[in-house]
Length: 284
Image 1 (cartoon, rainbow, N blue to C red):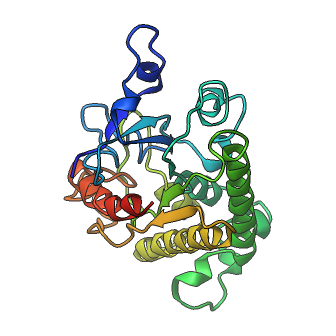
Image 2 (cartoon, rainbow, N blue to C red; image 1 turned 90 degrees about the vertical axis):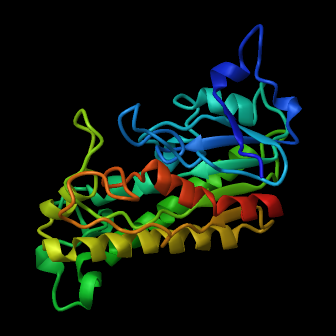
């Protein structure tokens, strides 16, 4: 199957030689975080579009950027360019909106200081651990409820922006995140690690790091499926890639077979994940 051709916004907006979107049978617009853009040093970097294919020739215009969170993807100041192509003067009828989002929202919420109220934290303080069951004892149920409401509201806003123009009702496709293991492995130049510092700050024992991270990512997966199921027109679809990659160990400081650093897969890892997209995209 042909691999999706990815264009930058600059290529699409080139005044003399704009990208030939009409040469393709399907045209996607993409927005998201580093899993759609880059997750390491430029020469090492890869993303989910590496190897992503569909049954017919397709292209994607990619507006993703590292560190992006869902709530900012409809920001009329920060993401003006993306919105101009989604529902503004540069819009066209896209085949689907591809999204990589939710992971950075989770990382940001997990990093909230332990002094904050339980409803604002994903992690529980040591005083709150009690005698809970396994890794659940390290999470704040009140905080997860807040996070659930937040993520649902952000997705509803994104769908409202989609429906403001030519692209009303087009499919939206998100993905789940595989099980990243908190460990001392960043992306260079002071970027990362992302999960490990929060667990250290909350005093979570190292032998529980992998289980706590897995539980958080499974809860995020459940939230995404819950949000998709609640959309009346059934236009939100989830590519479930969780459980595809071999997890790293909490003591690994560098790249492993599937993980370049703490939260970003290697090129080979991304190709394993992108293989899950074709069946979903081809059904749209």
